[in-house]
Image 1 (cartoon, one colour):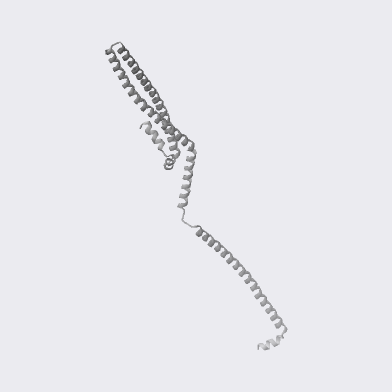
Image 2 (image 1 turned 120 degrees about the vertical axis):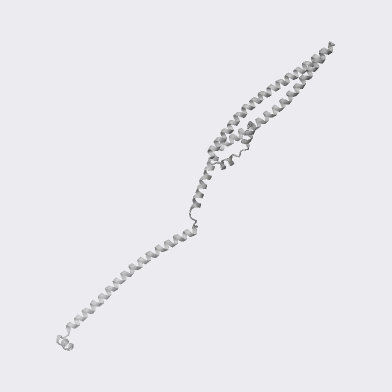
Length: 230
């Protein structure tokens, strides 16, 4: 892949999308930055070489134009000296130099266009590299937050489904059951106390009746009791 194609691919790269689709975004972003940096370094070297080549072509063009001018002057000189043979040769040399100058002009124009294109791509890639470098921490932190939120969502989705209302109903039923048990125990304890007091009252009545019977029997004549029994 040529340097321009590689630079174009890196320029078109959507850093946010690459991070979202990567299993290890931090590693991916570091690799992308390294590739960008390497491409920038290669592009700078190539631009420098192209500018040097441009200077060479520019020098060749100037030499060809100078040669064409010199041969034109020699042709004129030959004509003034009635040396048509030399004038013809000088004109042929002039034409050759002019044709060569035309070739150099086309080369120079093409080279200049290529240099400007490479410079433009280089500036864009450098700006994208600086942007990615400055956003590196933010992008990675954002991705980590998204991963954390995803894990939380997956944890909740794996729990048994229960609405907030049903959970409140369950808690209310549990509280009611506990309250009912407490009331039952209290009622049993109250019944036990009342039964004990009732038993005391019965015992008191029996004792009173027994005492009255003893008093009555003791006051009667034993003889009359004996006769009464016969």
